[in-house]
Image (tube, rainbow, N blue to C red; front, side, top):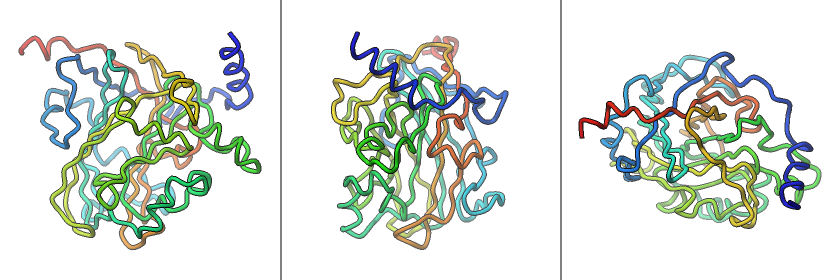
Length: 295
């Protein structure tokens, strides 16, 4: 009872008002994989071939929100398709993407890489940019709470609540310098454990080459994420027909180890990085049995 009351107080203290998610009056769909069709995290997208076309999102769903709003130049950066799925038994969200880039950056100076898990980086976002990444934001209970910005003048309080109610993940695929793939905006480093998140990818090119990367990943959403202990965190229970808040962006880095050249946001909202009220609405769909009766 003590834990429940404490969590209730925290949510009342730090939640933003329940604003309409963006785009307004639009609900997208999340495909449900049955237990015997869960995709392998290996970058081979054949597991997703059974997903109907209306679950996929092409490059027309994006806007560049931090530099300018020009249409995507598909010779520079081309988000060919993205889909989202879920599974009830494992209580996970699954993602796939196929993205072309004329310059893929997935190496960093060692000092930058070693600093990514420091409190300084988790507080300021230092060293996070300057590589191609997929940023995914999930609000399991659709509460519209803040992601960051709780008390920037008091870092211990700020870090305690970052991504606690709405999670902000950064996935690097291929991994930075061959091994670093997961950065959560907050200090809950345990979220990269296999039971909570994982990635798979395929790319034949070298650092700074051009080509198409296939991405796969899964995450576990949390209603209350403890920064130090998984056991004290409360996973969100994904349930059929429920609405969750969700969005993502692709950050394109061509010329610098320190910043990005374009920030392509799925729902055309620049504030998705920091505030759950600006995410899109997604519905967790029932299993489409007709697709699997053919097996």
